[in-house]
Image (cartoon, rainbow, N blue to C red):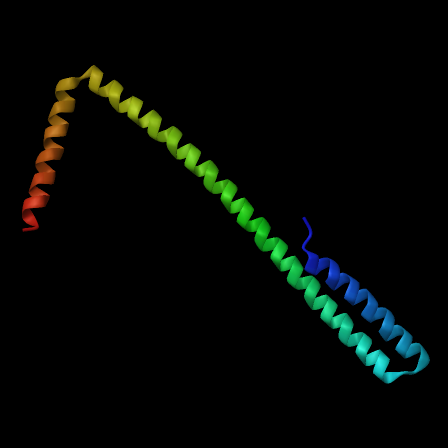
Length: 114
């Protein structure tokens, strides 16, 4: 999708070039200067539209990457949960010892803050 500033800027730039060329041809300094001014205005508006298009495209790409990252994070979380569940099923005693150690460590951290 092309920004309207790009279209109007390109049109102003073209009209300004034409007006400047006609002013040069007939020897009218005011038309020549006004044409160059319109050309510069159109060029600036066109560049502004291009910048808006680029920003819009970058935001869209960032959104797509964020969605992909979110989906991948969910996938890895599910795989990790399954792996932990499998390890607990294989050796429940070791899992119980690890859970106890983690609980003890958390209790030490909570009591050391007081």
